[in-house]
Length: 225
Image 1 (cartoon, rainbow, N blue to C red):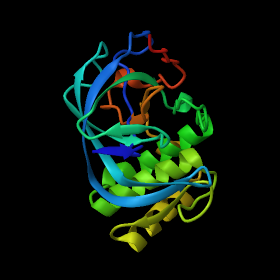
Image 2 (image 1 turned 180 degrees about the vertical axis):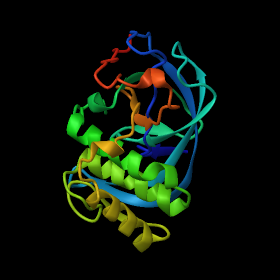
Image 3 (image 1 turned 60 degrees about the vertical axis):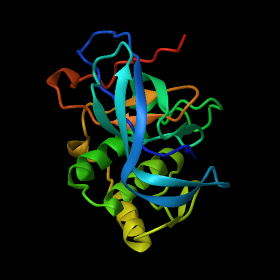
């Protein structure tokens, strides 16, 4: 089954501080769970049916060893396709220089939006537990990337409906967005993006290695040959 930009974010990590790496990750897309099916509108007009939640992946190859086995992600790019069971190649990149859609729209997000996502992670990621939690978290990420307000109800990006727990999920996402005040004490360290010119980009939290600290300014972008 192919889904239009299964919006789920994936942050990858660097294996050693200060070292330029040959970065490449090949992964198979397994599922979106926990999560909730929903309908979204982005760029003030394009409407898609998708699933908001945690993306589950299995690394199957590539030269970059920072991700091994199964890992989870969230989407940061809604204008391209991936499909369940598909295998895709990604570069590891800094979050502020993602996403990287082919049409160049909304790309890159820049440091201010990357900081808002880092704060969202720092404040709420560790406490996510229900389908509603994960759907709200994903929706908040999309809103940060594609909009400038603090609500998923209206604007350049919006969630038109969730198939279940609509009011609860919507309220969580809006409350979390409104609570982002730029407090750097909450910024999650080590967030990286998996990027591609041809399929949707993702964000995954790092495993917390001390080697990742201080890599925020390291540009690890590499165009695919």
